[in-house]
Amino acid sequence: MYVSYAVLVFALLFLILFPLFLLLGWMGKWGRKMIWRMIQLWSYAWFFLIGMPVKRVYHQRPRKDNNYVVVANHVSYLDTPMIFRAIPFFVRPLAKSELARIPLFGYLYRQMAVLVERNNPRSRQKSVHDLRRTLQREGSVFIFPEGSFNQTEEPLKSFYDGAFRLAISTGVPILPVVFPDTIRRWHYKSFWAWTPGRSRAVFLPEVSVAHLNKSDITRLKAQVHQMMTEELLRLSKPVS
Image 1 (cartoon, rainbow, N blue to C red):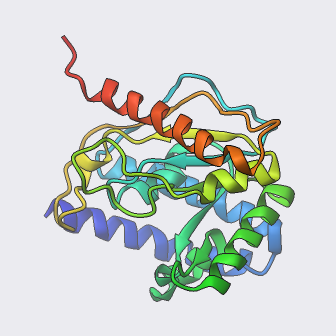
Image 2 (spheres, helix red, strand yellow; image 1 turned 90 degrees about the vertical axis):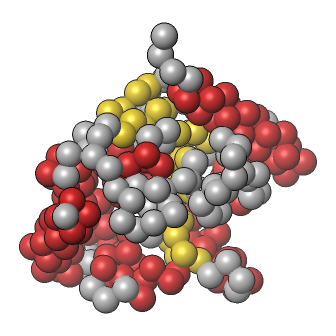
């Protein structure tokens, strides 16, 4: 019953806002940022109504005048809604193109996300171009560097190079974020495995890419992976 209620609330809020999404979708960059604000309000209402309060925890607050390549761990279906609820500034997430085929919701996803078919070289090339253009003209981007759900016993899977290559090539710093609670709220093993409760978004210090080049991708990737792993391990320890 709880899951049915959560899905129903999500769908009703979406249908109420969809005509505005449709209108704003014709207004280019400005319209996309307005859609972002509306999705933020939608996410605030939805998380509140389903009993999942979200708390931001800052090791270092992101600079308001800065663009970032935001990276986060990926262990739950809830991670995607958390992007819009937890990130306090405009970002465009990198997402699988399959999601754009969902009726109605796919329209919204095409407006907000940079879509990619991982097995299509032309699609991957276009997604990189779109991410670079977003960083240069619109704002920040959001990438799950693990690529898919972490179904291992480790805090993180290995990272793909893409987010780190993008950061170095554009000179935009990396902002690591961890979602330590989403797997307990909505486990990847089952669509019906939802549990109300708190979800935290923990913002780690930004990682500068100044003076780095392509030969530093592996080192940068390892540095961010270690930062996020250590934080996830720290947060997983019981409070004494």
